[in-house]
Length: 356
Image 1: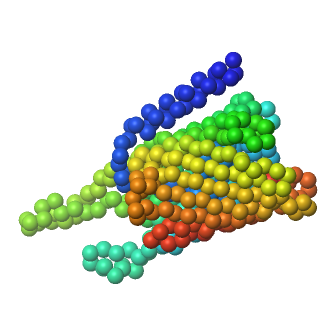
Image 2: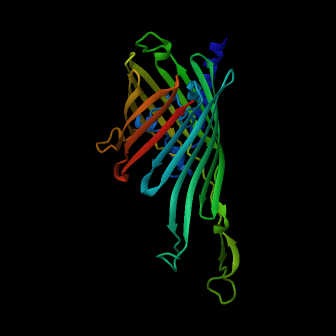
């Protein structure tokens, strides 16, 4: 009965994914809080963001909440990502194992755009004032293995954005499933077979900016004499949708030994802003007795529409990391990623993970 009900659940999830993505068709530049599309965690990023079927650490809070069920010990993850044009991004998350219940996760993502000069038509070089902007998302996740080969996870998310004296907020839900199969298991073990992962991210309310910056005096009769210039007015802002993302991916382990593990993965993404992409990644983990694990990772991502073009824009990622054990099974990991972004430049990601 469990197997049958789980299959029905997967079919319902796929149907829901298709339905949600069909609601918003082919619209570029029509979403807000687009920082939610920036991945977290060096290992995931260095695998070309092809992580929905690999997710097995605290960064699963972002990639696929179902993957958080693979965390066997309470853990923490801290990521610093100096982004483009002096924008700083930070992620901090934790996973807490609750016996016979599941795994609970909490993640905070913060993007700081820094300070900028205030300008207007009269003072185009600056008024002497400064303003700042920032984005934040707080996520609470629950994940559980329904059966040994099937995991489900969901997240509740609060999103906030601020620009000087104006702000906007929204609530969203993430859903994810992770299926472990015995297909392409080169060791014969189910846990070394092909994984199939799917997730829906950022399905929620719309965002609308409001604040004292939208209240400005208006001259209701610009071409007439009289005291009309101080009439109280307000600029009406539009509501904007969140970047809804559907991910589906596969991962296999063609090499599994006591010394070396190789993982290959591929993801297909369909966001509601129509920026579809195909991501591929690889991770080579080397076990060093008495020390821990040393990893080398790499990946690539490209828009699906550009695959048939001669000048296709492909972004490459490279990374390395180490995982050291202490006091038995407790561990500390350090990971690094270098990511190319074409004409926008390059980005580096630094991550520290702890299990305790």
